[in-house]
Image (cartoon, rainbow, N blue to C red):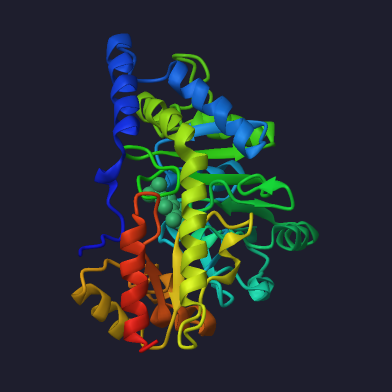
Length: 362
Ligand SMILES: *Cc1c(COP(=O)(O)O)cnc(C)c1O
């Protein structure tokens, strides 16, 4: 048996038919930029995230960059980001000429409470990343940031749908950034992203900047660029949005199964909090000392896995920054993401579980 880590060819027939129909309608309308798909998607997002303003954008990296820009981050400023994250979190900072200052994470890969030790007179913003779909304790982080006079940009690229204390991820920070990259829980058929915020001034800057500085055609109020979402992607996202709840239910079901069936393997640390509301079960990340060997064994048995991520950003040549980052560095050596997606079949998960148990002679 071959079990892919994620196979996006597996959309079921009704989803495919719905997407085809939406595409047909968009073709017939001849509208490929702006228009009702975008405003409908905006309205849907507002409801989901409970934010006053939603600005659909071309991708999640743009969303992070524009969020920082709207909060006034510029050359010479410092922004605190976790050492373990997708590279975008740091890229967004350097794109503005500012400096990312890396902080260690806890055992779950979330920014450690020690992030405050990295504050200097140049610090403007902290970016908590809800890695793997698990939310950072936002009450605590936002309160700390507020006391220290810092702004919060929430990297909610992996956590769409997660809710903490009744408040959705992305709605806690001054600005929240989402990605709709195809592999995310809500993924477009291409690139997509969005900023959400309750601050009207931030919303205005992001909207203006992403549209050549114009609110109305040919009235350029600020210097900007083009960072808009494609109408077609907004149209596809509106279809995928209808499947989102069912997909989430399936993810949680699969996660529960992994917890039940792998829980007794002492060598394996499981993501125990994955069933909670403040985790959207984006990735099922286990930890074990023999990670590389286990991964090779599973691969030999036809099972696809992934490592999110094998290298800390400060260890990358492009970003190189000195520091211990003890906990997050250890994670890069021990984490392994098992297949967990709405397209995974029961029989495939059983096979994955069987092989893992066999590996550990369980
Ligand atoms: C996916 C992702 C992004 C943004 O990704 P894009 O590919 O630009 O949409 C940002 N941060 C994290 C943590 C991500 O996983």
